[in-house]
Length: 338
Image (cartoon, rainbow, N blue to C red; front, side, top):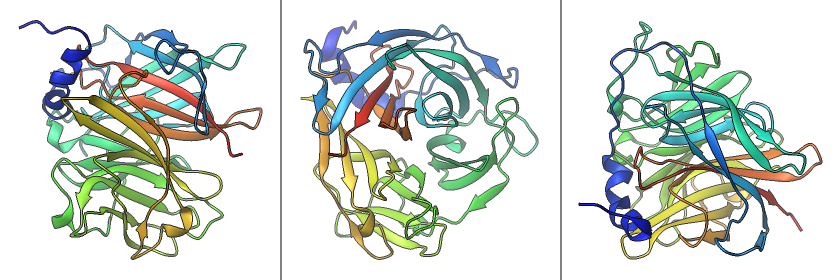
């Protein structure tokens, strides 16, 4: 059966979110250089020229494609240099690295130096079993990448080496009881708290949709002076797909919702920093929501950074699940604080 257009994307999105299992080469070079074609996105609201969406100002975006078999499934990323060099993980068990290029107007214009490497075991052999390397969340600090994995639930740390990513150097305790983590709804958010705030830059993890008896989302502060489990108030039918702390100490969450009737939605929500503490139910307002009338897809990755002119930036990426009905997107916004 042939599907086309928006209806096809809505109809098959439920399956490809959980069922797409792309073939992974049996053996490959440790690092693969990947050619990326990037089509500029100049309108966030399709067919409309406005740029302000609540406190967010759309700067620009890219629709990324590649002939490379393994490109896609981009589930989390962080900048190593603000707005430029980045590291990321794909939920098919790959690391990726690259650089976002910008034009003279500070709009994203392309992707350079994109490389991918399959995750490896302690012997340095590529891991082919997806359930072992379903990487979903990523944090970066002091040359260490901390990754949250679903299915085989764990939080692991790796030394960052774009030319040769090796096996993890450390496994972290994540405090949330393992029995409370749902099989495909584990830690999608791994982020460092504000270095000058109450958690002194400690690691915070948030699950996608592992719920307590009150229907709130399990999360934990797993490093820092105030370690402990907390929850985040679930708001509607949205699931949490990533997050990062803002300079003022609040936590910005990326959330996703899907139904066959209306398709996919994306939401950005600000969680008050003072509510992120052991035993608390953290909550905060929705800042922006977008549906399929906007340039979105299965939005899964988020990072916050400061541009050279002082603007507070928010960048998002989508996971195409290796489906011809979905897209790999990069979107860039200014977050206005007024």
